[in-house]
Amino acid sequence: MIAAVAPFHAIAISRLAHTLAAEGREVIHMEFGQPSTGAPALAIAAAHRVLDKDPMGYWESSALKARIARHYGEAYGVAVDPERVLLTCGASPALVLALSSLFAPGARVALARPGYVAYRNTLRTLYLEPAELECGPAERFQIGASAIAALDPAPQGVIVASPANPTGTIIAREEMAAIAAVCRERGIRIVSDEIYHGLSYGAPASSMLEHEADAVIVNSFSKYYSMAGWRLGWAVVPPDLIGPARARMGNLFLTPPSLAQHAALAAFDCGEELDGHVRTYARNRDLLLDALPAMGLRRIAPPDGAFYIYADIGHLTNDSLGFCERLLRDTGVATAPGLDFDPVEGRRFIRFSFAISTPLIEEAIARLIPWFAARG
Image (cartoon, rainbow, N blue to C red; front, side, top):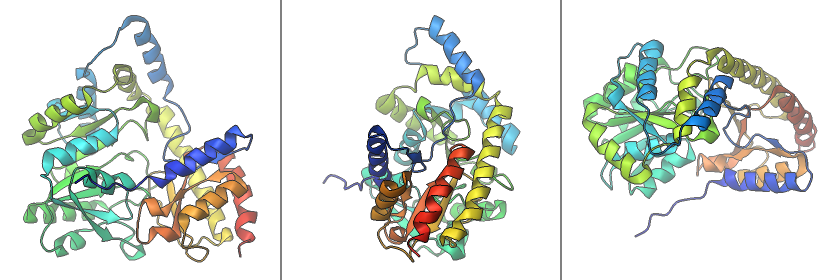
């Protein structure tokens, strides 16, 4: 039997947005979670140097693996052997490596609902069973230790994301430790998606490696490092998974792009430039948090990190996909339907990405306010 995989509806919204732009409309892209900025200057300069002298082929940068391992010591106080770092073609392949290395077909893996659409669909593609836990305002839209402890029978695994997509919520350090303890006690393996680390607007996010040495970490250069198009990510795996994960990487994906690896090594030295992007996101976040209540959007998830606002539009519609399409056609502002992230409650939510320039945020607000006002 072939696994049934639902579509990623935000892609359809983006296709429509690009069609409208080709027709001459001025479109503001808030539908995808990707920075509008390019790679940092030193990374681009490194790439130019390499293009002139390196023929490039299948390659895994030992220097980059060592630099990523060093990052865990500097940022989280955790020692990581570089051999535990696998370079991947973005975070999506890293997720495939993690899930396929940890679990046999039929295994149950718990995850929060709402959550990133590809978690659910990748699990199903691998013939794993998503065990979605409803996480609403009372849970700050995040999975918690008590919810995992209450699952009967215990799942084989759990996916944790902090900061989360689509909400931007961060799991407090103490709760991360509690999740790790429950999973250890019940024999549940942890996959921690930390792709939005570095993008926090209060206390920084805690890595699951601080609490559970056997967790599998998924991360990427796409978000904080502003290198989405370079398609480079990584996984940190425990020693027992190095062999299985490397075998899957080699057979399924060979190696990530050589050019991206050279550039990413330089990106680690661009903290000042990259933190400037975070300050822009913080400003954009504040502008939206001030403006959305005036549009009638008062029920939103707490955007602690990442670059999203997940807003309840249930007083206006029960069809978030149709709502996003209508909003785009009327205003030129592209957003993501909550249906992607929550097949049950997501029909009454939309997600705004604020990873664009501040002038574009201001323009989007100017377009949105009268549009929402006309709908009461």
